[in-house]
Length: 307
View 1: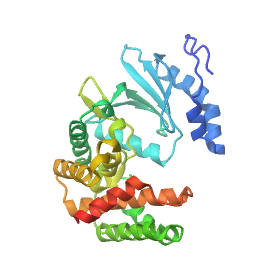
View 2: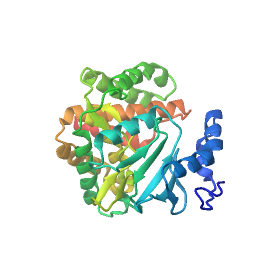
View 3: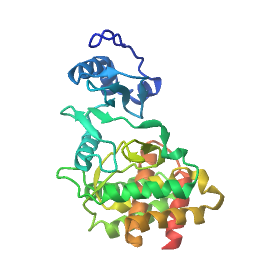
View 4: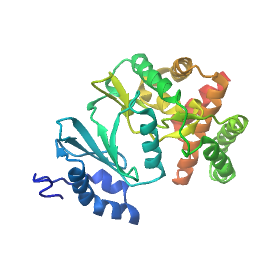
């Protein structure tokens, strides 16, 4: 709880979901320091709270108003490699197709961001083709930008994934193990040319919000240097109900729209998308899951059948 910040009585409760996301000792320490950090940055940047606290998977988001009356949001999350990557991405894009970074601390753990309409994510657009066309257009703009120096590289991440494959297949049933091997083989073929574009890494319908200066803007990048094909899977598996009645047709339609809008080589995009399936599979095995997610298996099956 916070009191008497900048002459204004302000209080908030840390959302339970955020507490559950930060159960490690480091996470609990960050939560304990969170009220003081909010107070410090409200004062440092002359901000006035302007609405209820929200949270993401790992972050606290507080609507604020700047001294000049401009609405903004204060976002706080633990300073990690991911938050440093997000900061690098936002600075490089400079608001082109993405939420604008207004200020930040040195670690990237605290950011002052342009305020968008959190009540209107792209997932509220009912027509799947219309929504995916918006997403693909933003993704094309974002991935057209060269990655800045020092960003995490897909080459390193993919190589580490391949090293984990023998460990993972030993913990899966025969069919899932075979799919993991197939995805790994596809990644091995394209790994010599991992790409150098600035990737969002998590662009799905709920990471795009309505805005004033543009109809839609991306939020919450995790930022990576690599091939744009590695950025497609979140758009393929999000809003699965829109393709569930005819999965092969729906996945192909989405894949065709994405690769066409981004101007990607389909074979390379297919291989890197299978690489993303591999990454999700490895994360699932690390989490102790005994089988791969059915949606991931279904997407991989469609892409492999089309190859």
